[in-house]
Length: 181
Image 1 (spheres, rainbow, N blue to C red):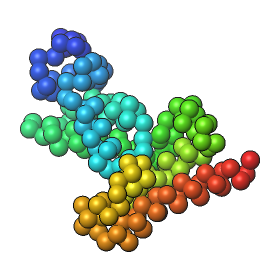
Image 2 (cartoon, rainbow, N blue to C red; image 1 turned 90 degrees about the vertical axis):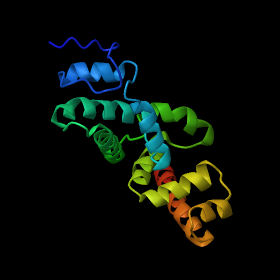
Image 3 (cartoon, rainbow, N blue to C red; image 1 turned 120 degrees about the vertical axis):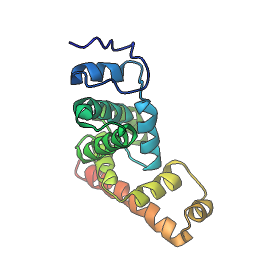
């Protein structure tokens, strides 16, 4: 048994090969490797529609499970790889955005089916990153299309095409689910 106390690790340096359960406890208590910020940044940058808390827990678990295999000096790259793997795994799951219950308060006032929205999120996450990013910029963040296209060095038509692919996915998914009820 290691002497690693979950909340009293000496610094943000990965402890040397404690058992995975101890390493996970250390990672969860106080977030010493700033995984929460790293996950949130990746979710935002790459426009994933996933439950960030689930992504964080998945990344922490992957770090704890694989840290013993890592060569010295590879911490940053390995942390990023675990975050990437966590996001890709969640994107493929049926409830990537979380269970239907958390979506209900958002969906009910809009007359949307939480299950259909959750399914649309899963399909959205399988789109190429540039499509997800354009959709988030145009639809969710409400950025000016001309400015967004210019910032991405795209024509306005190409930016709009990408954003529309994401929008159509949600419109078709919610419409199809609603039509069957």
